[in-house]
Image 1 (cartoon, rainbow, N blue to C red):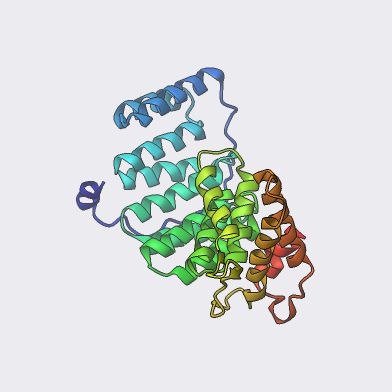
Image 2 (cartoon, rainbow, N blue to C red; image 1 turned 45 degrees about the vertical axis):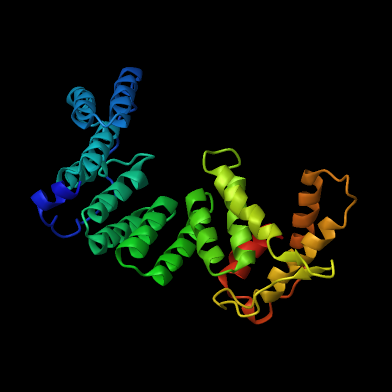
Amino acid sequence: ALAGVAEQGPLGDAPVIAAPTKQAPPMTDEERSTLNAGIALLNEKQYDQAIAKYRTVLAANPDSAGAMYEIALALTQKGDYASAIEMALKSATYDTVDLAKCLALIGTAFDLAGEPRKAIDVYDRAIAIVPAAGTLHYNKAVAELQGLKDPARALASLKRGAAADPSHATTQQMLGRFFGSDDLRTPAVMAFSRFLIREPQSARTPEIYKLWYTLLNGNVRQGADGRLEVAVNPNKKTSEGNVFQLDTFIALSQIAAGAMPAETPPGERLVRLFTSYLNAVAGHDAGADASTFLWTYYIPYFR
């Protein structure tokens, strides 16, 4: 891909993106079968062979927005970003369920070509067309974080994306990582909880569950005298308000769960911990923190 960038040079300005005006015909079973065969080739990194498969569909049906998208995706993975953008723009003139995904691919091509600012311009223009598409907000945040090295700006984009598309699980897991890296346990637990609710059995679930579980069980330790001690950082960032008391609720709930009879099954103990914690949070007064993302987005949901 890097060699491809060197050969192509700059990709030009971010393209003008307009709302789609055309309708694509429904995909036939034969077209779907051919595209699936192309996807199998793409998974084997046989880019040219996959593109050839997709082009047979496009030759028979010039309005196949799905084939256009798959060609653009293959060209992106091949490293031919200019051609990928051109094809994705054609696909984006059709109003389909994959419109946001197609627009995101245009931004991704710019980002992979080492032009994150142009990628962000594309995402902004795309969000104006499909404002509730979590994938666009998320991809924009990735470009801001990795391309611009601006975590504060990326976090703001993730929050806007979570508000626009609460069902986008990837946004929730990235928010959880952001909050967790700042030791903001309550917003991290809630973000990871939202992910686990959306994806209870995906390939990503075990890793996020482990992070969630560690946050719920990691700030109580046994002192030298055998008594339990609560370890909560009093000097936390205040970007989500004063979360010190809320994070203390996690530790107190952990102690309550630990006091259950020794024969209590682990699942019941975990339910007791999490339920006690949420009850404590629900009864807490936001005070001066009422306008923070934590209190306007996560806590009303869990209440």
